[in-house]
Picture 1 (cartoon, rainbow, N blue to C red):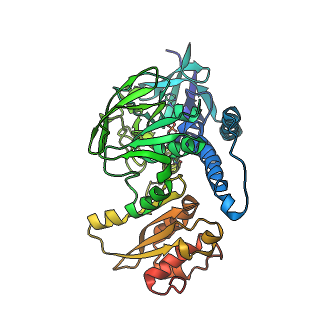
Picture 2 (picture 1 turned 180 degrees about the vertical axis):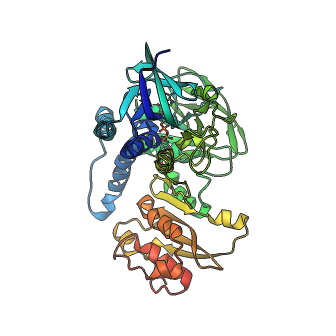
Picture 3 (picture 1 turned 90 degrees about the vertical axis):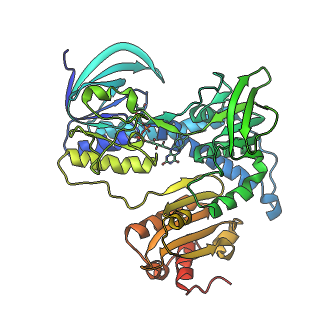
Length: 475
Ligand code: FAD
């Protein structure tokens, strides 16, 4: 058929990976087209992921904070919740960011084509125009010819086949809609996304149950970090069911009736007003006609790439959630820049030593590099610096001294190999640890770096001094 557009670079999907790739490609002088089926740019992260969840978590954290202020001599009444206003606030937050992206695309002369794309062959993509907020199709089709392509089609929530189709069974997108504040909510899956959303609902007044197949919540993080969060958050939960599976569910008038099996399964089915499925995300690789372009896709839908983010077809790259774990926005952005630069002929490669992870719960949990558990499994001898926030002036002044900062050093080289922080703002603090690992810093480098007082960041310098045996600030 006829070709409607020609470009040097076609980017499929406008999430953090896709828009970053398109912007870098345009900055490098490539004529760039960005294809996105949804009405706004920003993908999962800006529209239904990172950003709206943080907008709500911020509100929840402030509500929780002031609820403890009576002991400090400041009292407020019981919060009055206007869900419509809260939803409007969340939309304003995401709107600001997605609108900003549209402006940046325009400035760079990136052509945004609205529609659902699928490959026709290794140099052509067909786009079926979409309309409205979601997936309605107008019937209009366009063909784009490209020299290079970056696949950034992301991922979507895994839905369990036996869960009933019912408005009271939602994924993270549905949970972010915040249609109501249910009395009883089941969080299905004990990972970060489920527990973040659970935090929001529980602060608004919902009682939580969580069910997890494996033997712990937020696996991936060291248990000592998670324990601090779990102790503080225990009042939110009626029942934390570990090593337990959801095996069936039924929509009834009274609620969603869920059956469990496993070590901590309740004998009777349980009734919930809302069930959040947060059991993982699956990549969109099998839905883009990749085979027509000759691009290899795994059975699960991941697109394998090399360190330049190239697929098996040399002029087609892939980035972000669709290429594998960890499915995180900051990883997608860095991969995006590598792919765009490699396509422009530069020698860029993705060579990050570490990618930080953060749970934006309250307190936050952040970790980067090796965990203690991983080091143990790999037989790496560690030297640990553990600084309790009960010795941090700032944490005490904030009335939030439940946290700690832990740095892990290779016992032989004294270089930092990992770190974990639990406490308020842990996610903001972990960047310094990531930088230290990337720079190959050792205990002395970090300990002798002057940190401002009184800050939570000081805890990182202190932890290094503890590992080195020179800390004077802990008993
Ligand atoms: P996506 O953001 O998934 O974007 C892919 C885009 O491609 C989408 O806009 C999609 O519509 C479009 N697309 C797909 N197929 C086609 C097609 N055939 N044609 C046209 N367009 C198509 N990560 C963090 O780092 N920090 C967080 O705090 C965080 N919080 C999260 C909270 C939630 C509730 C969720 C669900 C995720 C969260 N994530 C977080 C993960 C983060 O959102 C993803 O890692 C990130 O969005 C991946 O970016 P991406 O560019 O690979 O893909």
